[in-house]
Length: 478
Ligand code: GUN
Ligand code: ZN
Image (tube, rainbow, N blue to C red; front, side, top):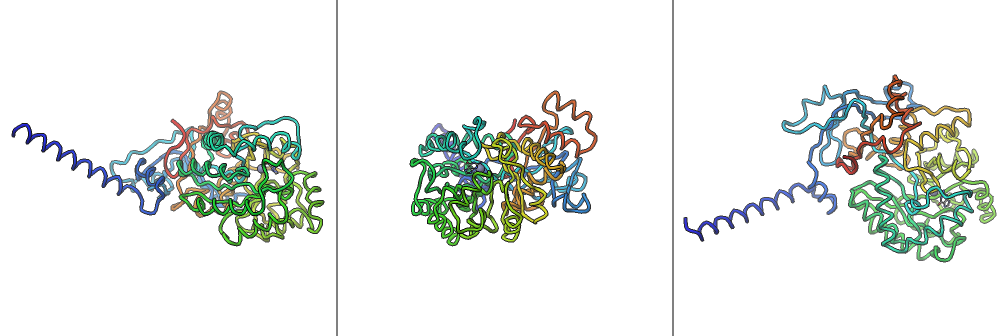
């Protein structure tokens, strides 16, 4: 063959190769996925298999007579993920036969533990940069530190930078889903959703609605808050794995007119969330009574505007009355229990037992920046101490249930996340049980799984998170 014949042949082969690559890439993307999920799916192998110690929960261990009906632990377990969804989870001895030939099996080591990703039911991303602000309780803390910090989030560049840092902190700490406050600026939520969408995370967030009792630079109006929230709902709610929450900051910063707008939004978009604060601090509770004298109490303000109900999440609830606990249960509303925040701001001791006996759904929230850690280990450890101060015990199994399936139930996402049953979205973490000299020593003296988990929630931190997976793809770790 002459020279020009060879080059025609080379060009023809190259063109064939390019079209084959294109067809393969298009086929790898699931048809219904968002463009970003399609890109991620194309990047990660369709099937992923892990083997080693694994744990998840099927129910609340404190409400289940037989522990084995609530806690599933496999010393030699296997997790098979296909296209970002759990296909099979169970003992390796029974599942290994179903692993297709040629698929590599990732090893989870003996001193590691694979479990579902943590669920943070209440956190403020704009407060990441002001965590650990000294010396004030809620209302002065808001004035002195929070409002000036949140003022910066009109600037998309600043918001984008903090959103990136925030999401990285979540993943470093093994948190794969969070219910997140933005600021009053719609831009703040827009950039957070953009970044979470890049990671294909299941995240719920909302623009703060507040039209009074805050500095002018942070105020919206009933109409603008309605319009901005509606535009964000239309743009982001159910886009990929993202969901929207109508987010009035708390009753004191919303006029009755604005709460009516929140109600109108909820009526127009019934499957969005409602996310706000409730009965955190005694001064705040008195203030609400003086602002809304016609209402029977703090919760009645939200209830009056039909903001209670399934997918309504109230942060704190430290000073609730028995009647308010009953209303929360009756309306199927949830409480985000935020231990590090309640201690840091001196707010009080959450009556977790009362919430449970009243039938109220409870999840754990870090509440950064009033909360002092992104870590669910530290959050569980402080929850334990809050219960100790009330003469009660909080077991390790119950704590890890709260941080996973309990959180998912509080967010009404139990059919999608929270454990590793077939069909769930494959969000999971691999923990190093010993990540420090002290951790290694203490692990060597721990006999049972429950004792190991309790040590984790007592002295664990982000060093104990080896890797984090979102929809089956590793997003943090080596
Ligand atoms: N109540 C109203 N706003 C806030 C906030 O930003 N953090 C906490 N912890 N409580 C609040
Ligand atoms: Zn909060």
